[in-house]
Length: 313
Image: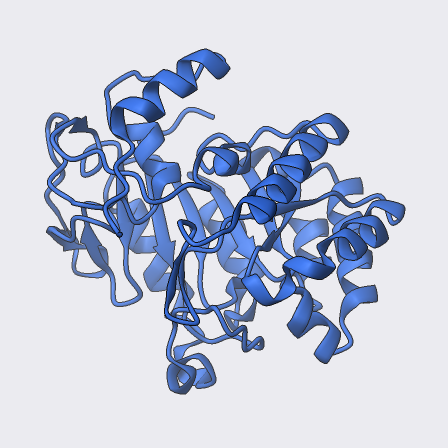
């Protein structure tokens, strides 16, 4: 995919799930007024930049945007997309029919097993996953390793493996019972996570371009910091918030304009990171040093040793 810049975009806030580890306030999450902006305005905003974007859509639940499929169809005429989704909305089927998989970097399907069981949506998840897979989309599944569900992950993994879906564990980052994760995982939990990271890689190879779930086993000991290292966030990567504000990254919230207002002031070169903690280390590992590439396990270990600081004690 040949693009100029990657955007992590909060397309909407509205969601049909109520996960206990979600960072969005319930009042907004349950309000359909936050389902998304006018699609014509959105498409025009990206086109008017004269850049080719890889637009990573998150939410909320992106598929709840009132005209999601048509919006994606228009965006992918000039740009590329990727999606975080809970894969529970029926227009997934229309998306599979109408959107060219070659214009979609990946579809990340978040299992959220507790909510899926509560809403009786397990069979729909399996159906939609295989429809997208058969249509040729680069697709993978994760489950946030929230402490209360760790004990049943063996059962969850086995069930979906039998349905030809590999569920990759995803690090929980946040507080539970006044303990901060991932640092608070105990040794037995880390051993379990490492086992499933390795097993997942053996059972399923995936190519994701920018958010790599294979990096999660490097994040289980605590937060990472890239402070002082040159990072091309703000140049090759930005965050776009729901209101259109463009900021350097999730950790360093320097405003660079507003895409809906036609204002964009990108960095011309990589600049040192000033954040104490990298809030989204997938992007930190990708952009913290220009042209940095992960080549093998030894490289990773040296790199993590260099940048990892257990800043929360």
